[in-house]
Length: 77
Image (tube, rainbow, N blue to C red):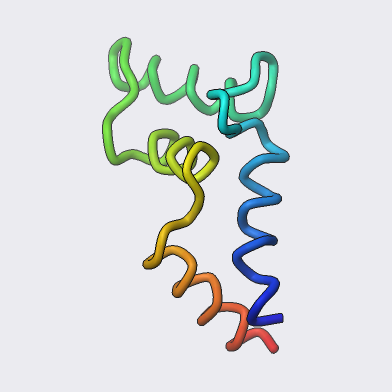
């Protein structure tokens, strides 16, 4: 499970609409972006949930994210 955890995270992030090409139209991610923009008064906050998930969808987890996912995978089993 430890080695598979980062791939699982990437799969989930991509499946809800955070892709390398941006947020997929009509996806769950698009709904999240819309809700966050409404709550923030018209924009999406940098470093917020949507921005972070889009960064993962576009570029991957990076070292820290991969390490965290592997640690979580090791804890789960």
